[in-house]
Image (cartoon, rainbow, N blue to C red; front, top):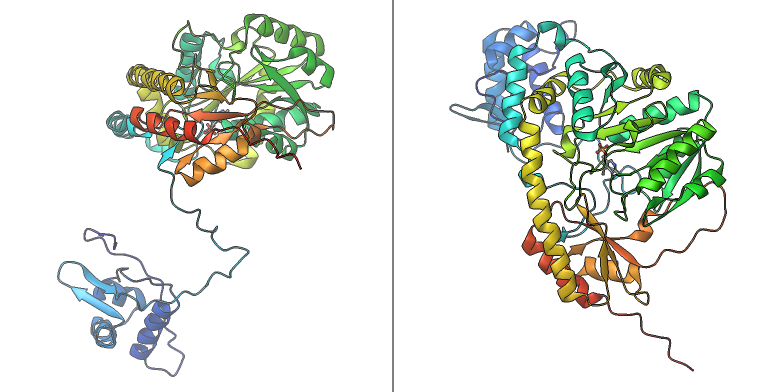
Length: 485
Ligand SMILES: Cc1ncc(COP(=O)(O)O)c(C=O)c1O
């Protein structure tokens, strides 16, 4: 659909060559035809007004008027009262046709799933759009002109203050604004922190296995070797971490990804002890921490050992991934290295969005949003439990204390990948826990994982949950035993 310029004149780069023997009118016509044929100007795009193009090229307005008339007559252009002169439909070419194969867009992924139990997506329909617009506009009206330049590497001072306060107030952490760095979401923060660890001579990191997807690749890319550390119902196994020889570990203590286990108090203490003993660093991915249902929220690990824990937060799960804002609370000794990583990789997080997020949090609108979505996630979680009890007799569901995903453990004789494939064919998107395995750099034996599905319930409605689980129930029949020959 053509963009409405609301009377604003678009720019167009065209040039004429006065030294060439060709008349100027002919040159302008040919330049426009070529721009349209090669796709530089696309169907529906608006041309500058005749007056503006004449000024730009230093030619008479009459010359541009007759050029436009000629191209209108040839069918290259169309014009209508009120919408100016535009490129006609279906006359543009493509200057750079995509070759098949490399560089081509990915193959059509097929129809979108009807019900998507994708992990980690919050309720996008609940995004507090009105509050966000208010915060943006309030922030813009107070933004000093200087703030339109590049901001400080560590991020907006006021937002860092507000985030440190939030971490202390809501996560019982021990945060100092001076050691808070604003980043473009958790993953970006993680790459900066991993780079900082390498700069400090740390060469191996333990990752929860199973654990968040891609973290093994991200860690290797930063120059670290990876150990896979098993997770059980109490969270990461600290004795295995110790045995791995790693001096850093990345954890999801508030709600393990993907099993949903909450790191138990005894494991927390063991971890802190481990960190003191080996001068280790715990990277705390504090995602999902805001959504606790049946018990008191568990405070951030960072509060227990601020000099050994780097806490990473993000609004991707609480507001929306599209905002791309997160933060790193680092022990002072890693601060400069984190900032150096950030300075070399980007010029920062959009300044206006930072100011808007500060407004959202400090005025209580963020907390109000959390209360609202927490209730709706609780209802979805309860619907999931009921649906599983009704449709999947042999399965059990765990990891329900917090967050918006849970682990559906299938009967041992069910083939996880077969269920995933059959569910996809039936319009239900879900991943097996096998997709969350870590690929370590040492090739010690890895425990097999019993079949299970990771069900995100943040962005599906109660009725979608009921329908989706009934489909999964129908498809989760045991793999037939081989017929003896
Ligand atoms: C385990 C985990 N932590 C944190 C995040 C948030 O990452 P980001 O802030 O880069 O969106 C995600 C996103 O899905 C995640 O899976």
